[in-house]
Length: 241
Image 1 (cartoon, one colour):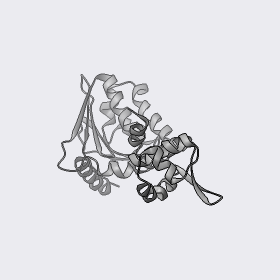
Image 2 (image 1 turned 180 degrees about the vertical axis):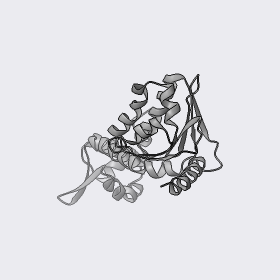
Image 3 (image 1 turned 120 degrees about the vertical axis):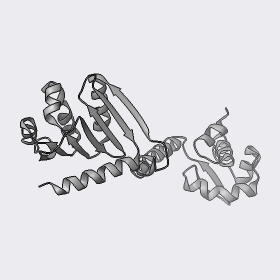
Image 4 (image 1 turned 135 degrees about the vertical axis):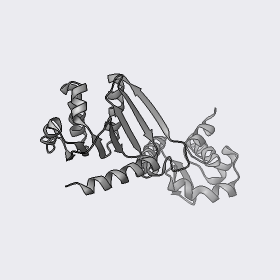
């Protein structure tokens, strides 16, 4: 692959790439000289000179009675790529919000065992999203060690990630609720709640964890499903004191 093709892969027009490379070789040149060197017609070059200046590939310099085209340092290409990366990153939240719209097949990931549960939780923790949950702490703490279970809230606090939880009332639930402020959590307790799984809704995903052996977790990534689950959760949340 030659240099012209490589520049076009960076989003630069092929004719502009040829002119820029010719300009780099010549150092500075008139349009006529660039046309001869690059093989691009002079009239075509005039048509896109302004665009090349706008994207920072060249500048124009007045010398005597001539206008010379001077190439910018190739480092400008690196700067251009960095700016494009920043722009793409800034678009990520909006792009993700429309990704996997209804009609697309939901993405499902399955995990098993304690290590699997931790991997599933890690997906939730690295998302940075607010979490809306249903929990049964009595079953959780009867299945696992405290060290294992406190791992999640400790990680959330480091991420400054908020957690809103509807939990079955019980001794462990009250212990957890007592730590709400320090663990960036708000908990509402309910007596009439039977759960065999913990359900966490975050972003476009729903994470369900079973604390029955062999311990399993499923992450469903689908905007419509996540929105529906969150809407149901919100109705329940609003009905509780």
